[in-house]
Length: 462
Image 1 (cartoon, helix red, strand yellow):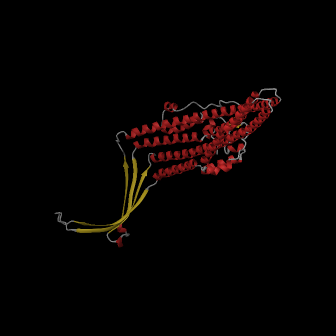
Image 2: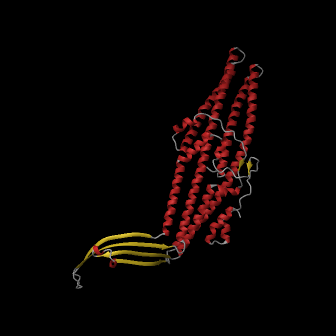
Image 3: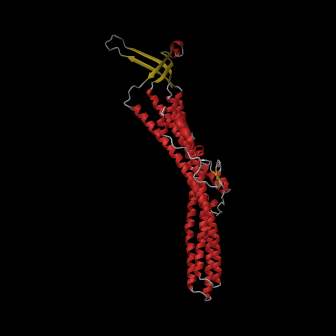
């Protein structure tokens, strides 16, 4: 039996559902291996903690640690843990009796004109009592409610873990996108310098009468086209800086100095441990949180069923009452009472029946949500593995394409200087070289983002 079947079976077992109902809620077992079967992926447990350190980028390490400490979403997730813990404490308080103290002084006068022949009298006394009320949890209603809150608390902790996994992935993705755009800006600036040199060559050849002015105009059009792409790239850099600032809980100007200097993208192409599909149930926080929600809803269903049974209370009082304050604490002033009671609702207009239906429907919903979460997790991992594998292939092809593009540009420029080839060949090789360099940078950035998404899909630790 897979872990998913075991989890759902253990959740439903206390509810005395029959076998047919239980089987209806179970999904097919998880596959034994991933869809992507490649040497790039290892069937071993992936890195549990600090997966971002494999990139060996100290700046990225610092950004993620800063985000963990002060990201607003992470802090709100911590607040939700505190609230869930408080709700658990409130539920547990029903295990214990409640005590309250009442005290005061009373003076009253009775009428002598009521026709009963009783003379007018007055009376005054002091009193102080300690009252106790305790609900005896005979049929487990309180226990079930406490269990539900305990599971909700555990689910909230898992949701916090899921928030942190997502946060670390978002920081890493934004950081790599920033570095990618900075590299693209370097490519544009470097190609602009090369294209400017070609413009000067055409101008010299035009001034000496070797070529027409068309060559100069064409060279300048390529040069200014490259310059026109620079502002858009610079705008994208600013946007990614702003994204990182928000993730870190800072204002943009506070991160600009640390991130404005361009740095190369990590050259990371290594086998990745992905484990087996069944291990997602142990690793992914959202799957564990969904499991906890199923357990909580099962407990609430049990608590709803207990409403059909009577409720037992033990009430008692202990105190002193005296006309004279000097006699207040004497033995004769002592008063006490104890009153075990039972309360059993025989008819409530269908409220309890519909409450059980509601809780059962919510349990079914939570089970379906759990199954959907597992299916989504497997889908996300398979998608990320496929994207990462193909991004590596793309990098290899782009590197060879760039090497050939450089050679084509150098050959066409040399032949043009010798007057052996038209300038159109130089123009084509210039455009191609810029495209090839940009393609390689984009492929590297995309590969890193895919790897981050795979760690996130695998439930990588933080």
